Amino acid sequence: MTAETYKAKSGNLRKRPVMSEQEYRTLTYDGSPGFCLACGQDTDGVEPDARRYPCESCSEPLVYGLEELLMMGLLKIT
Image 1 (cartoon, rainbow, N blue to C red):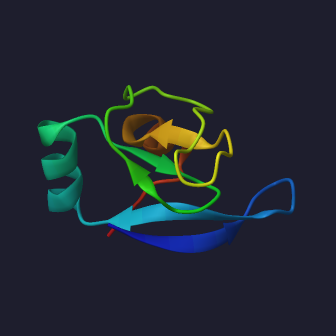
Image 2: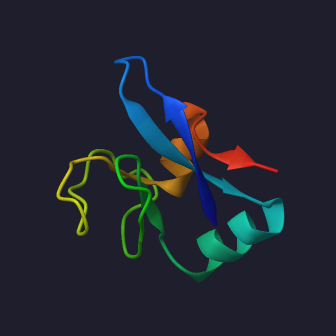
């Protein structure tokens, strides 16, 4: 999984995950991954519908489950 930077509605620069369809299937089958929109770190063990969980790396409350990011249009599948 890689990350790309985008500009949020608030004007802040954020990161969003970019992955292949196969990578998405593998990640969601193996566990419950999450992604921090602030620093771009992936996190294991979050619920698929997680929203605003605190990040273990940067402490920002911007960790979301991959399924939630997909529904929000912030997960880019190539």
